Amino acid sequence: MGRLALAGRLFCDDHGQVDQAAALALLEQGDLASEAPRLGGMARAEGVVIVSERYWAFAGTDGSLREGTMPSAPNSLRAIPLARGLVRLSASLSPLFRRQGVARKRERIFLVAAIVAPLALAFAPSWIGLTTGLVTTAALLGWLLRGRTLFLHGAEHRAIAALEQRRLRETWHGSALPSRFSLRCGTNFAALMMPVAVFGGHVWPLPATAYTPVVVSVLALALTMEVWQLVQSLPRLARVVLLPGLGLQRLTTREPRLDETRVALTALAAVLQREFAHV
Image 1 (cartoon, helix red, strand yellow):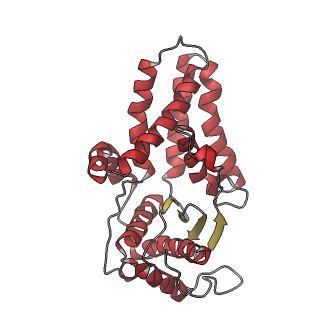
Image 2 (spheres, helix red, strand yellow):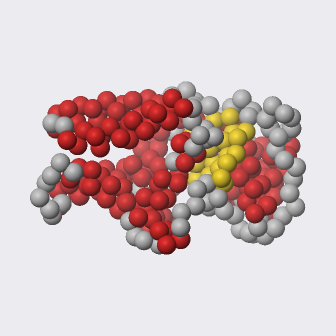
Image 3 (cartoon, rainbow, N blue to C red):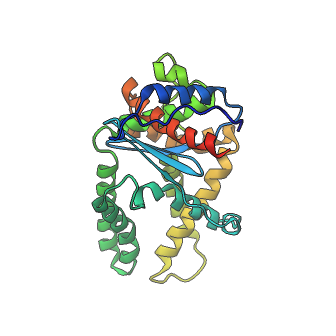
């Protein structure tokens, strides 16, 4: 990435309110960059998180901004097939689980319980596991899709697409509307994992034990990450393999308003600022 002259810090006062002129200046620099970091993100009811390999930023609908660094795993671990996928998956969730992250303590407890419950219930009768799984899934969906999350989810995708197309300034002003659908969306990952998990359960070669559901679930996560990364490097194949997930995004995203898109762009600008300074 070419080194660019930095605009001023995005904060304009001691209350963490964002200077939109500074954000726009950073976005204009992003349009001129010869290279750009690979970004991802997540939407929440009250804002948007944008992440790079090194940094994350959360822009709130109330005008606030929080920033942090992403965890870094050893290079040796990131080179091991299957393990590297689990490392990437856990890293993507770090803005939620860190103490200074974007989730409140009660939310972190809820998320941990939702993740651990299916593993703990591997020893329970199947009907209890199925019932609890359905209840947990419904609760997670309710938590994930509450408030303006669907609209901010679309805004997150639009902001990242705007960077990739170098149309950040136009998107800020509303004269460009990059797609609200994304090949790298977690919805695609979830849609891809379901058949992988079902197939893994049917072809599992070892005798079933109480630990089998746990092992199959972890392996399904790791294998899905490997497949997901592979198909993303082949755009034509990705549009076919990830078609179910792209279809589901019609349910998990909504067309964002301009102010919602600017929330996502503000988080993106904060990450760009730190990435440019890192070079």
